[in-house]
Each structure stands twice: as structure tokens, then as C-alpha cells.
Image (cartoon, rainbow, N blue to C red; front, side):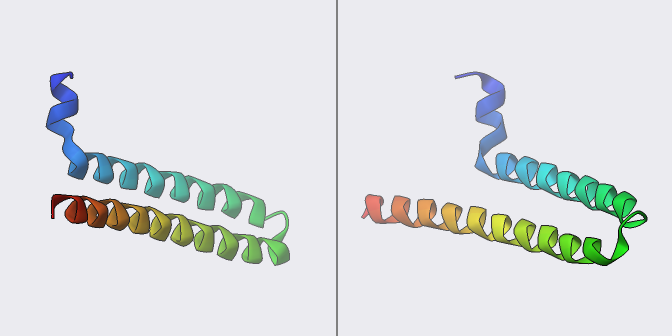
Length: 77
């Protein structure tokens, strides 16, 4: 296994994924803000939906990580 993959570890990987998701969300909100000037009424609902989807994805990743950690703890015992 390459050294840089070993050095990154799970913590670094999770932080990198989190940073990418945050940057992606920021760009989506900026794009929606651009569209808001064109269609303002419907766009507020879409912004809220995008934020709720982001929260749902973030919670889903957290639940998956917790399940993996819990399964690893059970496997040790």
C-alpha cells in the first residue's frame, strides 16, 4: 500500500470528504443565489431543500461511520 494512503488514515479522509462536501454545498448555494435573482419565490423552497438534503447526507455518513465503528467493536469482542 502506498505510504501516502497509510499516512492519511481514516481521520484525514473524513476531514477531506467533509471539506469537499462543504465546498460543494457552498457552490450550490452560490449557484442558487444566482438563479434567485431570476425566480425568487420558488428558489427559497429549493434552497431549503438543498440544505435539508445536505444535512440528510451528512447524517447518513455519520450513521454509516458509527455503524462501521460499532461493528468493529463487536468483532473485537
